[in-house]
Length: 118
Image (cartoon, rainbow, N blue to C red; front, top):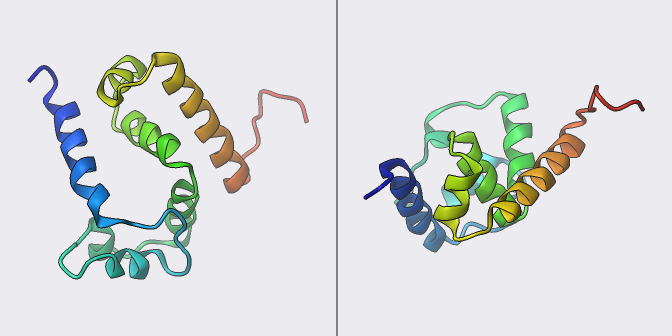
């Protein structure tokens, strides 16, 4: 095993996928996640989310699956090269998915890029 962290993330994703969580979650996020399986418990169910956290989680869940996956790997501290190798993608595809995910999240969260003149 070359990268235990990457292996763990891959195993966790493969265990999660059979849960068949719908692409579009509506209503209360914690309630909908709880409905996916009676035996499935998440950290979300153990904590109370504030409104801002709910808004960000909702925005993340609206991303396309590949963009959401790449973003999750990125947020866990993996480099684009590590993400590409682990997901079986070209590094350019990882960069493109990250860029699209960031752009979509900025739009959904109402974040403007201060570097670009409006």
